Length: 405
Length: 81
Image 1 (cartoon, rainbow over the protein chains, first blue to last red):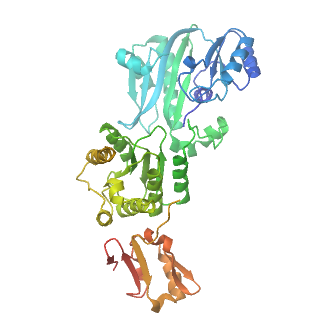
Image 2: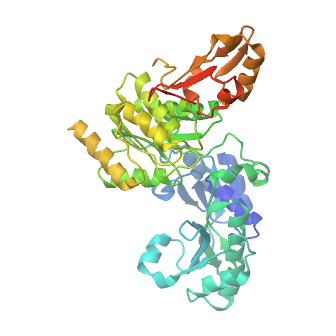
Image 3: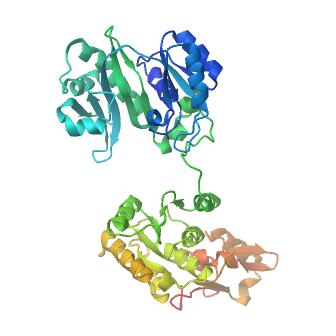
């Protein structure tokens, strides 16, 4: 789940990290009042869940409160990357001595949070890591043990920051790390973290993303402190009919889980895929071998025949889909024969030949022998675990490309 | 709208000798995890739309007198025993 900048700023503030006095406004009049309260030059920033605000004209500087109101009026009407702003943030134009970067991200390889700090803030951290690797400090954190300040200090010191700057930045990075864990974030970033001319440190901008699965247990933060409505899902686009239909099929039957996404997909190979990271791996494997997926999906948790059938039918009915590939990593609780029945039934109900329509069925695991009997009966090409995900994806791509030729 | 197909993979038959037994019907309804059996006023009813959900658990075979419930796997022409 993504947060608007004004919400991310609030989260940072709740964690005890200093921020500038800012105002979230939904009208030009509110922006004028906020600018007056701040006093002096301000910056008015569009609140959209998208990057590229500055380039799109969504960030403007104002010397007076009247100017701030005028900018707010313009920005509130400005669509950025297909999104209308939720409001504007009115922020003082800070007197910055130096900009730093502080973040905590989830390191999926190490399976631990990773602190990042740089004394070159305000710009893209990937660029800094590429061009000035010695200016980026890194430090992994434990998942359960308390986070001591010294770990943050080591990370900052690795960039060469010393003295009072080191002492002032340390509690900020440590608090950022604690809020990352406490609020189940996948990203907690302050960029820039500014050292002002008086030597104090403040967060000038913040970016937060929360693990979607954690939304249910972060109700105090989300509903009470940030006042985010339950139906505010923060999707950046309207779900397609395919996505809505798959969600409805999933909701109607408690057995198993299916998900389907097709935003940004327009290929000819439908994917019915899943199992322990298998979906991402398989989508990559299809693309890497020249295939064009028509969708992304996840199926697992031992779905019913009806649910597997429902997903496969939705995939098959998408415009441009010529064949489907049914592939998963090795399954233990999901039954191979049940999924086989589901996808074959989908073909039959749509008047399609399963042997022609299913490019490959590669689901090894529980009840595979029974599943293979069904696939054989309907002439579907299948394979067991001796065929890798990569190879299975390649076979599917070759088949659909052959069909298109 | 695509036509929904039933009985593609599995068929279930209950012998006429026990099909009218309301006690057995209730038992079958209780044990089947995918609701293939329904206890009707006339005894055992087979819910066709759920037949293909059969998970081959054999609980119905164990609940009924031996040889009176037949679960047929239509994809390999065998019967569950």
